[in-house]
Image (tube, rainbow, N blue to C red; front, side, top):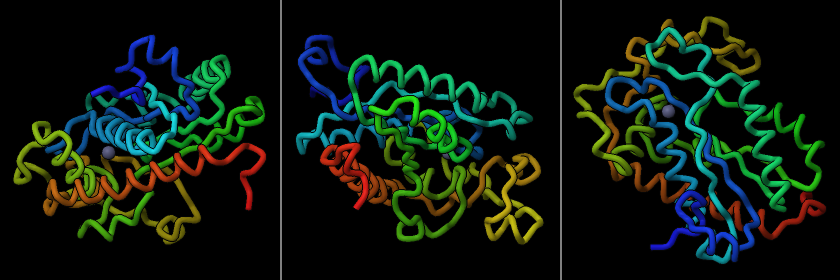
Length: 254
Ligand SMILES: [Zn+2]
C-alpha cells in the first residue's frame, strides 16, 4: 500500500506532485526500559503513532507528512546506565533549527514535533525559534499526554510502565520479553513535597530512583489494552492535524 504520508517510504514523483501542508517530526530516545522492553521503545512507539495518526488525517484529505524520526533524546541523568545514548538539549536545538530551515526552503508552514520521551522538552527552544520563523507555525505534541492513562491502564508510572508495555505488545510483540522477566518498576519518590506537588522540579537521578530502570509496574499490560489506547490517541492526534490544517497563522485564537 502506498504511504505518501511517510516521507522515507515515498518516491520522488509522488513527493514532487504532492503539496504537503503539515510536517511531523517524531522524536524518541535510546535508553533502557526495564528488563523486558528494547532500548528503542520510545522511538518505535513514536514512529508508529506519528504514521498511524498521519494516515488517519491523510484519509480525510489532509496533506500531512511524517519526517524520519530522531532516535536519540535527552538522557543526561541516565548516563550511568550502560549504552544509554544521550543527545544534549543544545544539540536538539541545532537539529530543530536545521529542520526548520528545510521546511522554510520547501514552503511548509506547519510543523509538529511529536515527542515520545519525557526527557525531551522543546518548549523553550520553540519560544526562541518561533520568532525567527514567522511563516511557520511550530508546536510540541507529547502523545503520552493525549489521553488520561487511568482510563486504559490499572498501574501508574511513566517509564516502561503498563502503558508502554501494552503498546509494544501490540505493535512489536517480537521485541517484548515475557512479563515474568520484567521488574516491578518500583520507583522512589523525591523527598520534597514541593517536588511531588509539581512546583519545584529537578531531574530524577535514574539509578537512585529505580533498580530495574522502569518506573511503573508493567505486569498487567496486554496487547488489547495497547491497541485500544493507540486507537484513541491516534484519533485525537489525527483530529488535531485536521484542526491545524483548517487554521491559519492569523486565526489561532478564539
Ligand atoms: Zn519510554
